[in-house]
Length: 397
Image (cartoon, rainbow, N blue to C red; front, top):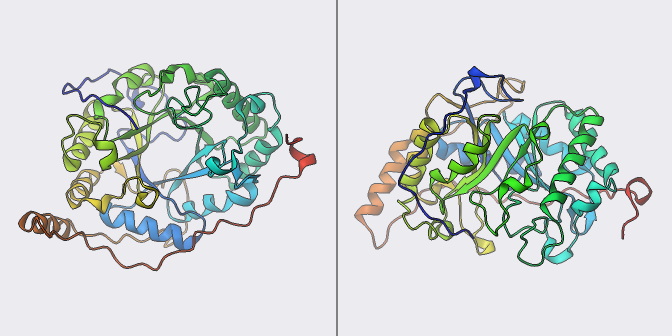
């Protein structure tokens, strides 16, 4: 999706460390970094548990953040946060992690329904009741929550983007006005346990830069980014220089995939790219304080398999790099869980992964794939939807 030019030079932009300034909401102390994964199944306990265990087996470490997606519409109908998104918050907490919710205003099957909470209407207050319900659900949860609204807005693939490739109807100004309206509703309702994560794509795609979408320091707690293997770690330079002096950074999505990597003219291979990522944030981007690997297999959707175990070499390097004590293995300073409630750690030993690497190199024609435990498929049904009453929310057009 993204055309990338790799730069061989690393730049370190001077930014005050968290210890030299007041920390942002939920920012870990010192050089500590929350690490974790984005997973597709948060709709039941078994599904979430299975996926967290799978990630942890290859990462070799317990996670402290789980990223999951939410949308204003589900198959054409508005859905209450109270009904759809309150339970996933509890499940993630039980897993020993804090949630990053990536909320989008369009239907998750937008291509079929074309249902969307238009950012212009949000800005006018027509969806206030919907977001009041969302704020109430989050406030009742009580624990820390990261929320990103309409991520990757500086691309061309989402209908809320000014550069939307299928015919834009909403602008960057509409994005800002709707973002502020949503935040104001949460604040008015007392849902102060939210840290707001503004999350563009790296790099800009489509001619409307990330800077046009920034809602302002008073409405943003963290700056997030999506960074895939089509881009080198140095792709962070521009946005980091713009905001790192004022905000911590959250890499809300990162992963390797063949379809992404082909756009990187100097792609060094999966293992090397991951190692450069870790070395880069440690040496050159100290305000990166949270990272979340995109642990999805989207091959059935004619996209990439982004899971760590797809390439044994990258899993081995990831496990080695994330073993550094700076990468927080539980969000203990953010949440309180009962002993034994979290997902137990079962690790694929690095030696096993490296044996897989050696086997592949010794038998390039019929090289084996990494051994993954057989897991019964989990039903992915979403909960029954509860539609917001028309008289409570708005007159739908």
